[in-house]
Length: 367
Image (cartoon, rainbow, N blue to C red):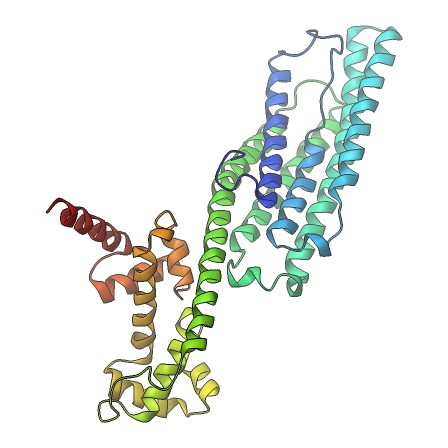
C-alpha cells in the first residue's frame, strides 16, 4: 500500500503505519513464542512496544481523512516521544538487570512483569486515544461536513465496533496474565492475535478502496463544478430550441433549472425539494413532469443520472476510475442502486455498457 497510486496521501500513510505496527507486534509475539529472538543478541529479552503506536496512528489517519488536521490536537508527536522513551527505558532495564546478576528464571520473571506494566500503560493510552477518536467522529461532525458528501463513514464506524472487541480481548488477556503472575505462555492472547490480523486485512482492503473512491469523486466533482460554471456563463434564452407547443412553459422552467443546477447529482433530492426551490406545488410539478416527460419524477431524474454516468464511462479521463465512484458522483446513493437503475434504463450494466463501447471502437478501427 505504501507504493500504491495514493501511497503519498497522508491519511493512507498513517493507515499503513497503523497496519505495520499491528503486524510487527503480531510477528514479534509469534517470534518470541517460537524462541527465535531470545539469547540471539546482547539484549536477550527486548520487546519493542509496537502496540503503543497503533491507536495514535489511527487517530492521525482519521483527522487527515476527515481533512480536519489543522483543527485537531497533534497527539501523535507526543506518543512517538513516549514510545522512544519506553524503548530506551526497556533497554536500560534489561542491561541493568543482566549486569546485576541473577538466574535466567529470575530475569525472565522480572522482565515479564516489567513488560506487562508497560503493556498496561499502553492499553490505557490506546483506549484513551480510541475514545477520543470516536468522540471526534460522533460529536464533531460540523468540522467535516464536506467529507460527508463523499463518504457516509459507515466503514469507519464498523471499524470502531471491531476495534472495541479487540480492546475487550486485550483487557481480558492482560488480566489473565496478571492473575497468573506473569508465568508461562499466555494462550489467552490467541484470540487477540486473530482479531488484530482480521483488522489488518479489513483496513488493507477497505482503506485503499474508500480512499481511492474519495479521491476519484473529488476529481469528478471538481470537473463538474468547472463545467457547471461554464454552462451558467454561456447560458441564455436561446438554449432551448423546442417550441412551447411541445413543452409547457412550466416544464421548460423545471427542466432548465434541474439541468442548469445539476440537481440530479444530489442523491437525496426529492420532488418536495424541487417544490420548495421553484415555489411550485409538488402535485402541480408531478403532473407537469408526467404530462410532458411521459414519466414519473423519479424516472425523469434517474434518466439524467444515467446519461451523466454514460458520459463519465465513455470519457477517457475516467477510464481507470471505479464504477462505484462514477455511480456515486452521477447522483446515485449506492453502487447497487446505480447498477439497478442503469440496467433498467439501458438494458445492460455500466460495465457492459463501457465494454461494448470499447469493442465498438476497436471494430471501427479494424474496419
